Image (tube, rainbow, N blue to C red; front, side, top):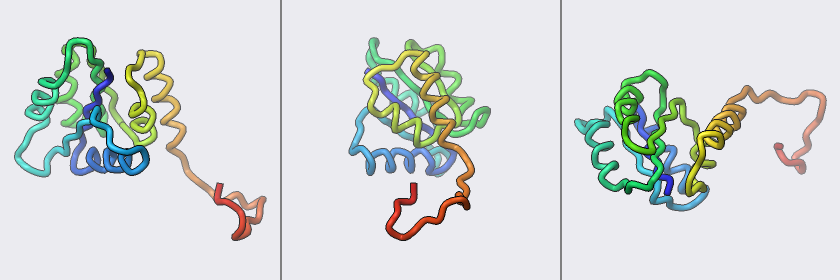
Length: 137
């Protein structure tokens, strides 16, 4: 089974989980930790998370910022079996991962590339006039 641990500076991680739950319902395979809002550490929460991981589980660690302090702590867990780490997480990626029971390296790479396309400047298309009756997209 794929288990996901998301951690971030501040409330970003719990915000992503909240958005996933609004859009898809509760997902017990997603665990989050908001770092630096109290005295708890990322390491403490990762240790507790790994106590719930079975030998045949896949673990996907997701952090907000590549090279940031949260990501650096998560990096130290890459020696754990079946563990991968992705930095720069966004909601599009987590939504795709939330429906997966397991994921290959190739599929994970594809989902990361796909989620990158969701980051873009949205501009008004001046060649078309949109009426109130038409959909935004």
